[in-house]
Length: 164
Image 1 (cartoon, one colour):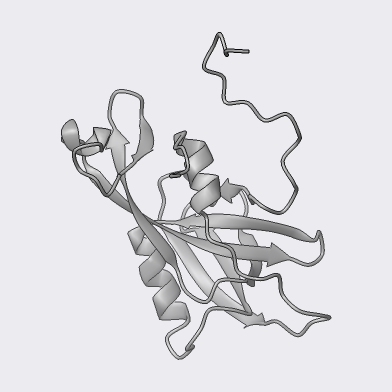
Image 2 (spheres, rainbow, N blue to C red):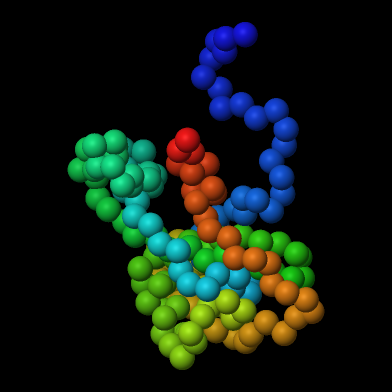
């Protein structure tokens, strides 16, 4: 039977853990967790001034709506974090200044994996700089979750279809 409307269909619930959510550091409370990533996963986005939202920057510039509309570029970095107390996984979004703060806090570390990181806003306002501190390392029990990349989470946010 032909579909009448272009719904993005899925007849079974998504499997938990496959697509951790992405969070932005709140001005109200620090965010802490153990880093599952070995390094920052970065990507370019565009800032859509009309909708006040980020949109994906696509490699094929002929298909990239942000490039075609000459929207400003923004770099975003992501880390996969884990909180063992709540057995919760998520991605934290980093700005270029937060990435610089992360590099300063982890200058002698060959890998970010296993580091306990704290992210907080310099001031209690949304646009304030994100500061990063390394406050320890993973001691167990057990292993950290395997590192994940934010591609699936970002694709869902941006409404991108997977290439076939």
